Length: 156
Image 1 (spheres, rainbow, N blue to C red):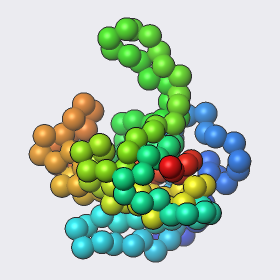
Image 2 (cartoon, rainbow, N blue to C red):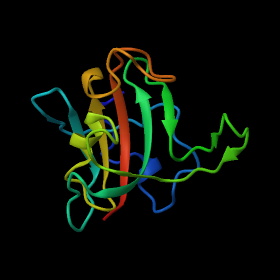
Image 3 (cartoon, helix red, strand yellow):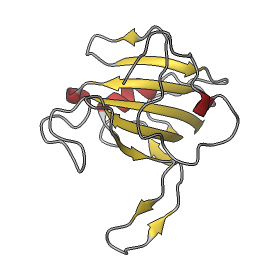
């Protein structure tokens, strides 16, 4: 679900300039040499962006798809429309905007997204301790390792 030896460095879903119509159900096969950090977080840059690198504390806008590392099942994607359980209405697909800071997003995102540049796409392998841990959330079970593809749109 994270790295597939012999796969292309950039999968076809990301090799064009068009935005995917939906998040892939399973993670597209990529190859590359992951960077492994001391806390177990791993990442591979699928595409390198240009411009200033994102820093913690900035507001970022990204597209993403997340999969459970075990079984490689998609649990969320900004490329997908979302149902609002309170209103019953469907929200169109839209990039996510948030502050890249502890308490705003999971620790694996704070650590793994920092350093990206606009236009870049990075695959993150986030150990459960840097994700939702023992409690899990929604479709993510307790102690689940996660894989995300994150496309940096902008940072301010």
